[in-house]
Length: 200
Ligand SMILES: CC(C)(COP(=O)(O)OP(=O)(O)OC[C@H]1O[C@@H](n2cnc3c(N)ncnc32)[C@H](O)[C@@H]1OP(=O)(O)O)[C@@H](O)C(=O)NCCC(=O)NCCS
Image 1 (cartoon, helix red, strand yellow):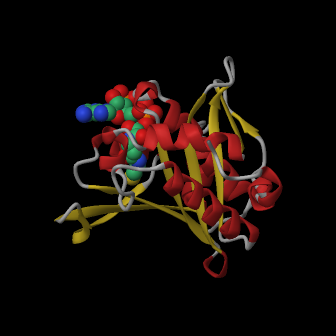
Image 2 (tube, protein in one colour; image 1 turned 135 degrees about the vertical axis):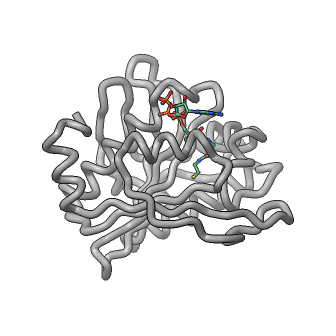
Image 3 (cartoon, rainbow, N blue to C red; image 1 turned 90 degrees about the vertical axis):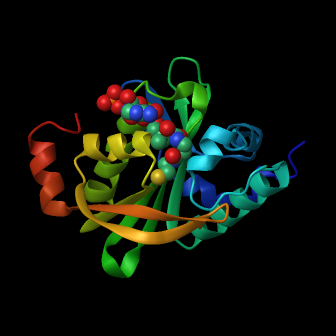
């Protein structure tokens, strides 16, 4: 039973509704908490995230949504629930941290395990890139993945991000130090890729 009430979550409504061929990126609401908890609590999803604890409880999911609501309220991030356009089924989450003073930000994502390897994340990430560079007028967008996260690496490559470097032992996850791989895209690189049809 979710303890959140939509009337407390006005910040979440700032996420603009966006579509791709197969997906709807819509504002999160309290009714998404159980889907978020279920999918993030899956070991395969959780293991690949950088800071999320496992097991991941309803209370943690609710607190996460409250924090995102506050951060969206002050404009420091924007998060979407991603749903299958045909069925309305919740598939995952896309997010943007917004570094306003730098005209930049960072993209974040996870999808439920049963939706992996269908191209969903790449499709949604490309839409987020268009939003970041065309609507928010970003100069730079960054993204990282843990070294062993091959699925995330492929998403980043397919979007056309530029490799920046491997940061040694940047993350301590479940007691183990891990290297983190950093990438970015600048506005002029986005324009070139967009002109070549990469984000159609
Ligand atoms: C990373 C993640 C979001 C990718 O979502 P997705 O919808 O499966 O992504 P896509 O289908 O768009 O692309 C995945 C690509 O990785 C490839 N891939 C996945 N696992 C792979 C593996 N073990 N070895 C080789 N390639 C692999 C897929 O084949 C696909 O590439 P392709 O289109 O060239 O065939 C998803 O795996 C996930 O939620 N993981 C857990 C959370 C996470 O890692 N979040 C990101 C933190 S940086």
